[in-house]
Length: 97
Length: 189
Image (cartoon, rainbow over all chains, first blue to last red; front, side):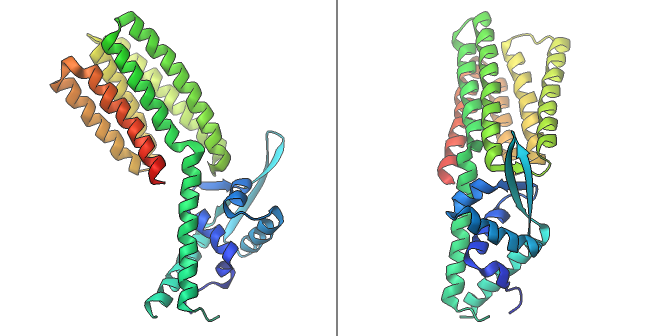
């Protein structure tokens, strides 16, 4: 199925990508905000982020802000493209119903 | 992997929900509050121009600008906690420097042209603020340019066609309009 992506299709990862592509290209989201948005645990979110990062769909920046470790996540341009193709594939399934 | 139409529909719905929740999160983090804050500054400031004497109105504006600047800094910090630009601090500093330089140039313009009255002075400041707004819009959010151009048209109408009501006009339509826009963005998202 052209454009369909099995990595992205997992429900939590689909929600992560949907949230990140909503941001502008130069923006990134705080880890805590993303976790609250998805209502998942730190470990669960971390595991899904690693999977997406390994695939090259997102980038995770870890840094210290006011002496506290914080992570900022953003979708890569390839991740945005793959996500749009995945959405198009889902829409195609509905059209061909 | 075989996906049924109902599963595809469910996935698309969950995407829509996340897009909506993300927009709401960003909005609730304070972006629309900038409009409400500066709308209130304009509303009170221009009402001061209309009802108070020149000296008192000037003091009101100075106090409002300080409060507006402090409020913007607090809102900016809150907004940055949820979403930030990838160039982060550098962009923030450049934007801050841009506004600082714009106000310096605005001050120099006022110094050189010596506006004849309060209305001319207010109009020069309004135009400089809108130049900044539109420039920021070109860089950050193109949609906001239209609101900047709309307020320019309102300000020009007030200045040229309703000179006796200029300050009230700017208070209600400029300040009130910004507050209404902020509340609209809040409710829409």
